[in-house]
Amino acid sequence: MYLLGPRSHTSSLTTRIRTTIGARPTTLPYVPRQPRFSYAREYRRPYSNPAGESNERQHGASRSSIKPLTVFAICIPLGCALKWALNEDEATTSSSANGFVKYKLAKKEDISSTSSIFTLKPGQSSTIRTDDPATKRAITSAQFKQPQLQIARNYTLLPSIDGQDPQVLRFLIRKERNGEVSGYLHRLSVGSDIEVRGLSAEYILPEQVNTALFLAGGTGIAPAMQVADALAGGSHVHILWANRRREDCRGGVSDTARPTGWNWDFSGWWSPFGLPSSGIGMKDDVRPADASAIVSQLDSLKSRSARESSKQRQTLVDYYVDEEGTLIQPSEILPLLKSAEKAADEYERGKKLLFVSGPEGFINHWAGPKQWVNGREVQGPLGGVLSTIDLHDWEVVKL
Ligand SMILES: Cc1cc2nc3c(=O)[nH]c(=O)nc-3n(C[C@H](O)[C@H](O)[C@H](O)COP(=O)(O)OP(=O)(O)OC[C@H]3O[C@@H](n4cnc5c(N)ncnc54)[C@H](O)[C@@H]3O)c2cc1C
Image 1 (cartoon, rainbow, N blue to C red):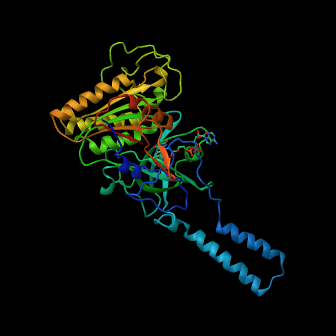
Image 2 (image 1 turned 180 degrees about the horizontal axis):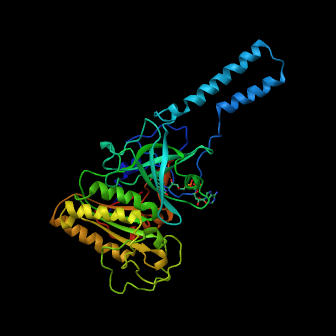
Image 3 (image 1 turned 90 degrees about the vertical axis):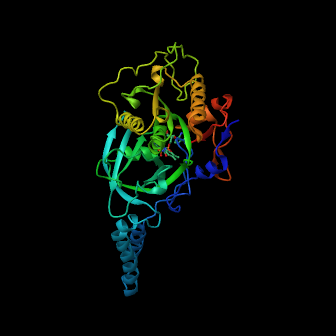
């Protein structure tokens, strides 16, 4: 029997709400969500600017004769506007009204033609810390503000790399075609201000995890990396990472041997990304020298787990590339589930978690859509390909 969830737990943890700038700051354990790649538009509050308001009044005043009362009426709003403008930095950097704090875009590292790693450094005094013990076993994301449109989107925090300042934040952000926030972020130059709010937890890992198996699509690798980081050395982690193009996972070499006859004809096999499958077979047996920063970080996570654990608790990564016709097959998942179950019986207990993370189409294909209940998004029943597999006591988590 499979469990989808733990349902009540994850439904509250992974609840997705439309996010407005004016909403309360979100901190653990409250977990707001907004659609990952869903086309739902978020509520937009019209941009209101106290300075603009005062200008209007100023304009109105200039049409009338200048009387002492009028001067007074002009000065007060002008003074307020000036004070607001001068205090703006303080307000946005101190967990203020809307909880956003100012960061500087310190580095933008291209991973592919559509995605980059954004490295953020604190703008002023108040920051979001990545070493908070409360977030140690959580999959966390932060919200980025698009100031002109007054909308915000979630981006999953990448785990720290060796020697990283705990005040620094890193994110893998894909530029969506016509995407409002991702487009805005990708247009920013290094040194620009970015307003960020968070962190919030999408999911908190149970105390005892035996195995975490990830079906990750595209930027869905970020939560997989957080889990691999949190469980390194203590649990078995196996990530199956699917991408549209090789450039997204440049230099990635799969750990698990392929089944014989891997160069099957994939025509007709449904691609979760909607691209035609060419059936040209694996290409990741040759690792270019210039592995992407994400692949390098995955390699570091694998080395760390190998150093810190026995063979049964290692981190493995397999790469799948749409344009190469290598797609995650249901027939590959079953043996992985079985071998993890066998290892669990032999070595130790703990939960067996099967995560599905990535674009909406990817999640729908593997685990069925999430559902909206009373304005909140919940896990919904298990559907898709995984519903046709006997999952025993694996828990499925849609991220
Ligand atoms: C918890 C969580 C974590 C996330 N983590 C990451 C992450 O680490 N990295 C990452 O890159 N993303 C992540 N996302 C997704 C991210 O939050 C955004 O959804 C994504 O960047 C798109 O936002 P946008 O404003 O750029 O695009 P939107 O403006 O919201 O548009 C999204 C897509 O919809 C299309 N679209 C817009 N309007 C319409 C319309 N009317 N009709 C048809 N199509 C339309 C656009 O062309 C675009 O392709 C995460 C989401 C969640 C919920």
